[in-house]
Image (cartoon, rainbow, N blue to C red; front, side, top):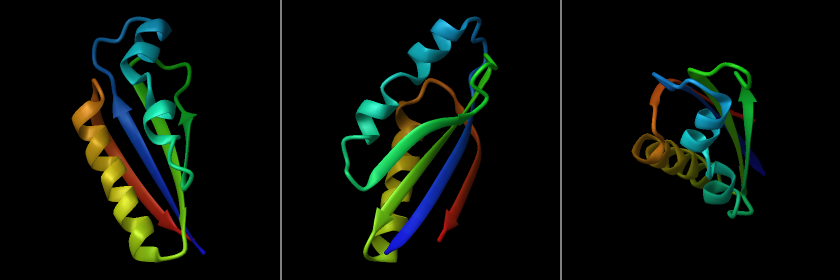
Length: 93
């Protein structure tokens, strides 16, 4: 069993309310949580308006599959989120 933890810190320039932040970051649970190998949560900056931190825990029997899924998540986040990814970290257990 291999576990990958992908953490993304996202800048949300011009965000003026928590409601706007939720709208801009909305749907992450629906987009990524459908996959039974992925768990997603807002792991930091919950009260900050202009940034958000999200963590994805990916589990699989083969490390290469876990790494590939982490890359897919990161690519999709860059294309779909209304913000800029400022920091990315990956950890494999």
